[in-house]
Amino acid sequence: MTVVIVIAGVLFGAGAVGALWRIIRGPSALDRIIASDVLVATAMCAIGAEMAINRHTDNLPVLLGLALFGIVGSVSVARFISSRDDA
Image (tube, rainbow, N blue to C red; front, side, top):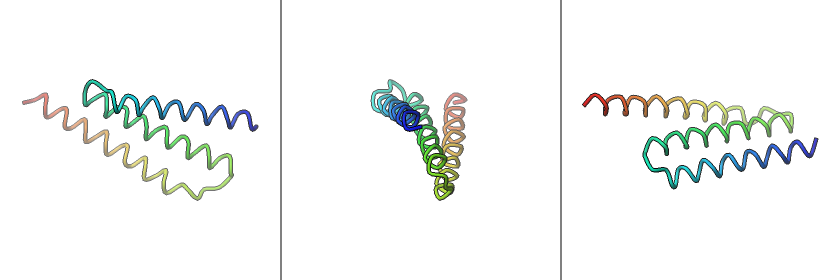
């Protein structure tokens, strides 16, 4: 079980580093926005895995807040890009 936890941690870390790299180096604003959504989703997965490993639900409000942040952010960006294309 410890090996699986370490592998999952390494993969979550690699996903977060990749998303941060795209946020810093992204050639366009849309790349940076998508990378921030990926970073939020990676954080949610890592928090969910930690809750499953330790068998508690203490961080459930944090997960719900991150989910709300991700949805509102994606919708806001979609509306911004849509209004910019119409002009």
